[in-house]
Image (cartoon, rainbow, N blue to C red; front, side, top):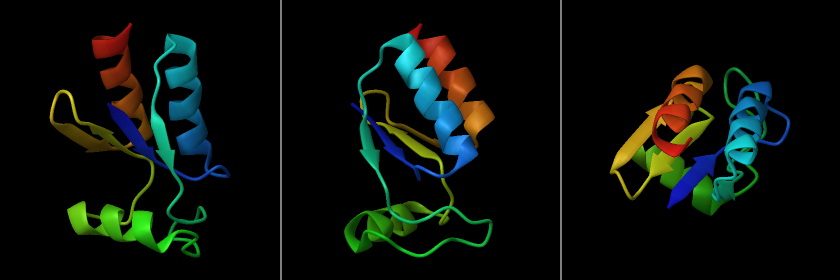
Amino acid sequence: MLELYQSEGCPHSRKVRETLSALGVSYVAHNPRLPGDQGGDVTNETTHDRLTAVGDDKIPYLVDTDRDVTMYESDDIVGYLGEHYS
């Protein structure tokens, strides 16, 4: 299962969502906070706590539970998705 910690207003998150859609890959989207370079306002305490428990308060953040892979950075995520899901 793929989980994407993201924000609707974040252009980097949009890039990952568009890639997932283009590849026809199902995923669960979590919206822990609003976009912002220094971290926007928290919109969901539960998902924000999960995000910060595993590392930085950065989005987008991909969790691939099937492959036990986690990663930040939209370009890295897009490359990973193209390699493993196309």
